[in-house]
Length: 459
Image 1 (spheres, rainbow, N blue to C red):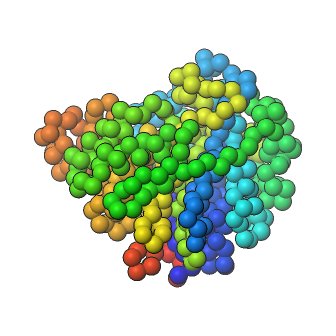
Image 2 (image 1 turned 180 degrees about the vertical axis):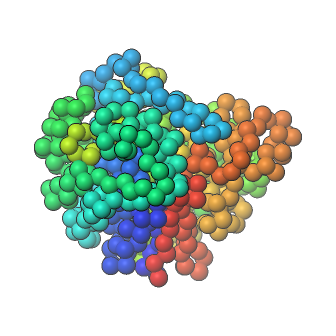
Image 3 (image 1 turned 45 degrees about the vertical axis):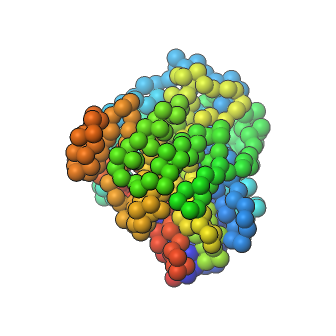
């Protein structure tokens, strides 16, 4: 096999798979897929956001973690300038905070550039070209993306630039085409010049003229390599995102609470209670995740986010900016010049012979619980990756257990927990993307149906 890839959209997955078919490696595939996700998953991710990349090169013992999450500007605007907007998931409502005061210094483009310099094998310009073409031609919205546009509409179109990018005076609907010719121009410039144009060049000047992220903020931004966290679980060990991000730490808390016990619904609820007790961060909202294994056995796990769709778009560029300072700013946790706190947790489950599962998820406060459940489904329950990702999920928040499965809801309620019963699978419970390396060496992959995810195994 030449590899496998799972992502938040079929076109994202196919872009990475095409790179694997033409001889690219896992990092090449991650970069190409990430760039395409900036178009077909634009409310969730883009070069105006931040992220983390976990890379395990074939034949090496070490796993690398690149931190290119967003940073707090040196002189952030007051929290009183944040715009409060409500997103309605149907069975649950959540408040998000946006506006120019919520924008942090982006890091994604520089992070992927660093990854390419260290591990890439195909030319950078070739990896970004498909995304630029897609932005110019447009992508037709399927139901999961139309649903996303509907529920995020108050965030996406609250500014004139956001309205121009995301809709004709209203949310886009199923079958309509999202095209972003100005973003296509920006992607072509990024491909030709590298990310310097975003951090010290003409695009940097446009960003600094529109939001309180200065040219100094952009010029001083750096990618940081960190040592992954590691925890033993079910005869193997899991490597994940370390502090200052909190997502990996919460995942470790949950797996340690599960231990070697069977992953029964009540055991998982108690593990998620332990995560809830340890949690003290708002984290990113609109995240996407890409998991890749190539034919040589190298693995890459990439989580990127714009937050919760800021709707702040740099005029003339199609470049949507993050709103990561939203809830962090309100909590008084911002530290000028330092990284914003995150809950993202790109992860890798190792076995005796190397990587066993490449995993990560979207889902704001729900993502570490989603990863916990998928890992437990594979390692403790013995499910294949497709079934493990599709299986009904739970989420514990403020003592209440949200359940997708009515039978599990009955069991949890009988044990004395307050329960919210969801009518169907919902993106509220995260958007996991995972690749499994089976005992016989074959590969399987799964994108989360809750987000209309996609996966490809390349023979």
